[in-house]
Length: 294
Length: 85
Image (tube, rainbow over all chains, first blue to last red; front, side, top):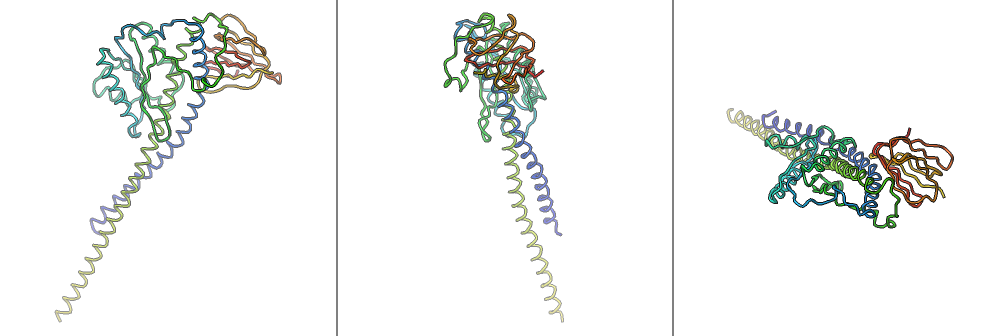
């Protein structure tokens, strides 16, 4: 076997091996999307119930609350960036980091200072490599985020908000739109704008609740939980979106490997044909030489 | 008409179904709910919620840091950590 032929055979083998790996990762991601979506789905009754309760208190009590009141002067903003721990997900992490960068530029242009809170190893690596400061990071839990993580983040940001260290809080995360689309979105968490759940519009108007204890204390207790459930929802969506992005990236990697295999097989066949042609012409040449020597 | 009850935690729906009576502990004391109760939104104190379903079985749910809402015989018990006890 000629040298060229050997090189191509080797390249085909290597592409085939890569394809096996990417194909496996694609299938794993596909099965994980379903689980992650299941978690988003399972947590939605909770989010809906809290949203409904908060809107009820907010509508009927006319209570001003520190968490819902816009401050006159916004000096410092906190930005929570949700990325994943692992890569191989196409533009998943880079688009979030880009979005966060744009937000930061925008905020700084408005004369605000920006504090960063990072979730996911990828964001931390990005910030550490560029020697940028951040307040706190959470790593290793982005695949299956639990309510505890959401609570920890919420407690921390609410605390720094109520202490007056920051005047507004944003979250940057990948929203799961469909299997094919993950949309980087920026949501302002605090001060709160209470968003009615989609379903609430076609339900009957909110009833006149009797509050126990008085509305102000109910609101006091519910608002942090509401913030927490918003963060939890963002974490879950981001986890589902990560799996979808991985699946998409791995699918195109498998397709590319397929294309490489086809191309190299053609080249190998060419090389083999050239080798055979050369051998034939050598034999014919040799026979000619022998017969003319007689 | 029975109460339609759903008990949800942050991660999932813990229990749902029809019930005839619910007893829960709120921050102001115990509250019992039968059909036709006025709309209430109450904060739960740490403790068990006892749900008697239409068959008469009592389900106990451990609910911490949550709230309870009653509205037109629909009861929602919402707690971050809710689990059947």
